[in-house]
Image (tube, rainbow, N blue to C red; front, side, top):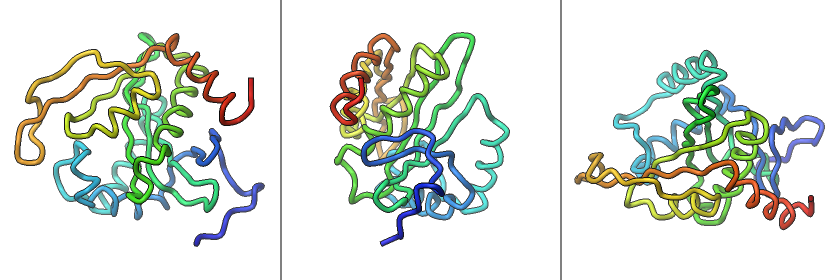
Length: 200
């Protein structure tokens, strides 16, 4: 088990109960490329080809150039300071107050245990309370009910459905269009922080 970092050395941008968010770093890429190429994870992503570490490094360099319109976080366990996934805000439009989210938990043994929901709540709090966005969108495949349920727990609602829109898993699949508005999220956030952090 990885030794936990001293509190004074831990870089935390947003803190939850079990996970915290920090900026993704170049040192994270070697693990991320393993997850992206894992068929169990890959099936839910829009990446169509095998990815190399060099591909990820190029993506990382573009990400640095893309601020402030793309912000990507590492999802890190408090217990071990281990990165378990990635979550980002993309295509941030400050004029219209919108953005999209994308995420995955790479540690498959941690799927369906609430880590993604916790990280998503932290990202949405940042998007609405710091960046002053008003609407966050996301898309999810019809064969990924776990991700759709996570979004719904965070206040997302279905806005539309693209029928047989993308080719995945040997067939054309539907894609749900999901979105959450700031005014719908904030009451959820108030309840969430009281429940898990005892904060008002």
